[in-house]
Length: 84
Ligand SMILES: [Zn+2]
Image (cartoon, rainbow, N blue to C red; front, top):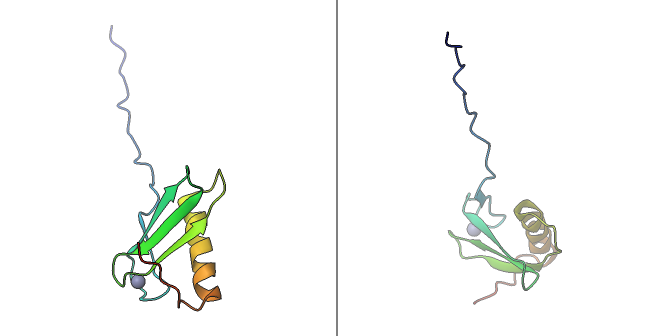
């Protein structure tokens, strides 16, 4: 006799948002890229071109890097935009 198997329902895991709001242009187009090897994160906005690199520590997550980016942005008044 067969036992009824309940169908497993997979709940999709909430993934981290890939894009963050930009403090400069206000659009949701900021991308965070962690370069752990060099201990920096590159944060750039795909809309207005704002680009800032911040120092990161080992176990930092994208969102932490993003927060440092926002802090830095306000600290420097958004004047420094790094080109490649
Ligand atoms: Zn922007």
